[in-house]
Length: 138
Image (tube, rainbow, N blue to C red; front, side, top):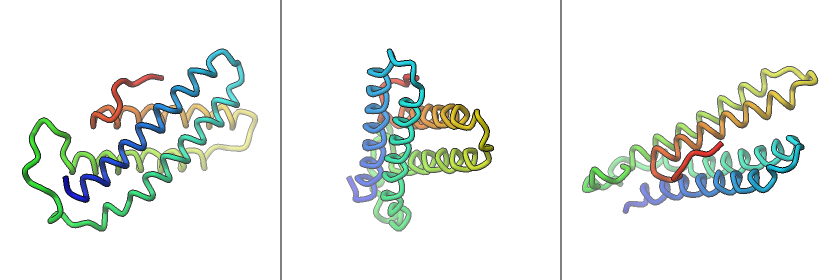
């Protein structure tokens, strides 16, 4: 495995672990009616994933010469992993843009919560596509 593969794989694995941890935390909190606690946990997970992606963006500096051409078809290729990292980054960029457009009315927190939930669901789908998350739960 090349250095490039290791970094992409590590980013996706850490992201999957963060999403799984969020799911576990939210499952434990299922009995509570407080969506504020859910909102806070989502915000923490999103922050952690953004940090993982940001630190991993050093992938862009690597050249294609570092990519091995002998990867089997059954494996997720380096290019697919790199694209998945970019897709996750794009999802959170879109989330930031959407949250910036929300007005500061009474429904702001609810709308933020729902938008975050959508973004996390999209990240789960991306992770599932590259075999980093076994099942997509909501």
